[in-house]
Image 1: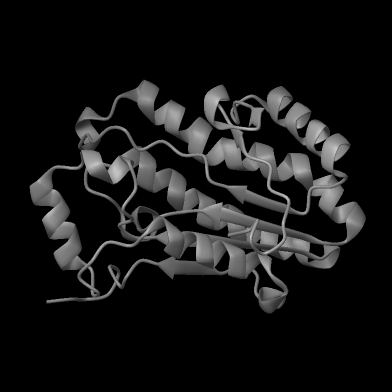
Image 2: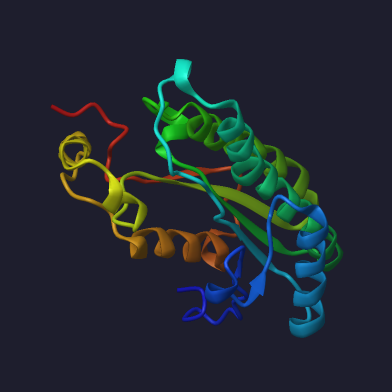
Length: 212
């Protein structure tokens, strides 16, 4: 969607087969190098979408593995910090920037068996508001997308019974589509959202509402 809206998109991922620039967001040196390369090849970094995340295990709190807790903190939260701090000087110098952090309803509602995931997503909301406050004087907005249950590859691995309960919990009684999230990102990065910052925008089908 950002490309359709006229943006020149550079994809950064740890998987070299699926990306333009290979980068581990937990490694600050790699992040800085990726930003430098982007600026050299494309002239500037105007938009950052922090979408790196891990969601590959469920464990109640007493069984949460410390090593997975630490990994999730590094990827989901420190990774967003690294990327935002790396692009910050470039956006500040130009007096314009858009940062969108990908949070989750797990960060606003909690998640059974998702101590590390929900904690990191809640942390992203705090980071979003701080960047919004500090970025405003530099022409930088920062907002968060709070997706609900989206029909991604990760959701395909969820137990069918749990899938049905999640759908029934959602006010619209259906899954969201990746396109719904892409539409919200594009809006927040556009001039239509130039007076919006520090917002956690639910793209959730109403899962956070009381439904019965």
